[in-house]
Length: 338
Image (cartoon, rainbow, N blue to C red; front, side, top):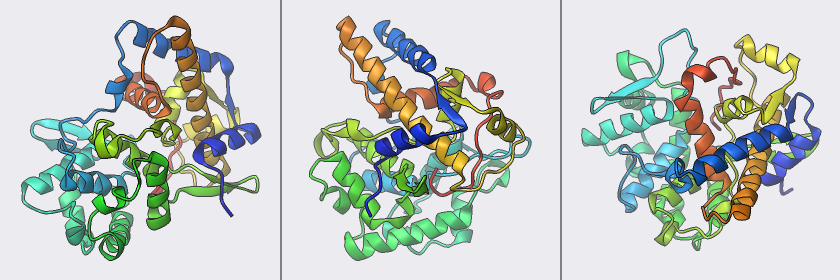
């Protein structure tokens, strides 16, 4: 049975959600803040999804494989607030979370370890990967054994079906973001981020969609990464963007859910609360994106706006306003999907 797409899933979950609500006033507040920032020139949406200095700069085979490697492992970087954090200092800059892992990948490549080459990582073991991705003060990367499992799985598929490079997956997508997404989901099981909600098969596909978006970004939306239908992707349902959505009043949690999150307890993967938070976040960003587009059009302002870029704005907003966001609880799940 074919399940609902992430956009359809967000709409369906929002219509049935009990403990997460979307507020029209919050959608308006968030959208108008983005419109204001775009209109004043403070925010250029296309710059929200740019290569940083620790992302590959060349859109060649090795750059493509780097992106695929990083997104295979792009999950679960959070650490308990009162314990040591997973950070990596690289070239005099200290990175946190996902960017810390990116820095660790580059540190390994600088040492001539071909970490992002499928021929190498298909056989990588826990001790070697753990050593290569270790954080400052020897803090291990979370879920190390799961990361090894994912690399072994995708490495075997690439070696058996795609001549040992993600480049050969990309070459089959006909410049279509949705076709590339389907190729990823049908060939690499660890990217298949779906569940059952109210008897319907729903999907979130955070890592698969971010992989497509990262390829788009690597090519700067041109050439083989110039996906004309990139706007069909949704936001990437994780645990951080909901903090920004709460901050703007776009989503609101019930007192029961809010109390649970304040206790800093782990939520089981697949729990109804997890699905409501992720599904409502997808729908929230869809609505904010639509409202931003409408308002810019009415003002005659030309700008590229899609859910990926709005997601990146909200994700970056959380990082920039880290101190403020500390008071906003987020759901903690140990999962390979985000």
